[in-house]
Length: 158
Image (tube, rainbow, N blue to C red; front, side, top):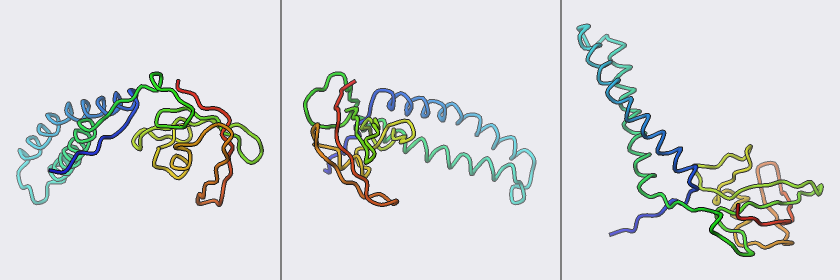
């Protein structure tokens, strides 16, 4: 039997997933009601409400299946319990860019990533380049806009 790949994530990411799953499960009976109501209108071949409700039902069921899979494989990691001198999942890293301007990122799972809010996936180009690095190491990352260079200034587990 194949092993199930764990999905590392922070507790906040797990809570978002479970909240989204709960909301979709609560939507299920409403969709069934909408389908029943649309059926009552007669001819289903030209019933836009019926087709829209059935399409939404398919979308919700697919999303529920995906979320249930992710929740079942979740491996919740608390960065405050981690330590060390290398960048690992959950670490918050302060980097100096080419202009010596500090940028701060936390290494998170792919479903939690939000670069605008300083959260990058461990499997993003920058995330991959950072994993295993130490303070004062230089990093070169190739991104769509070209090559970027960073210096690891600080590693925190907060």
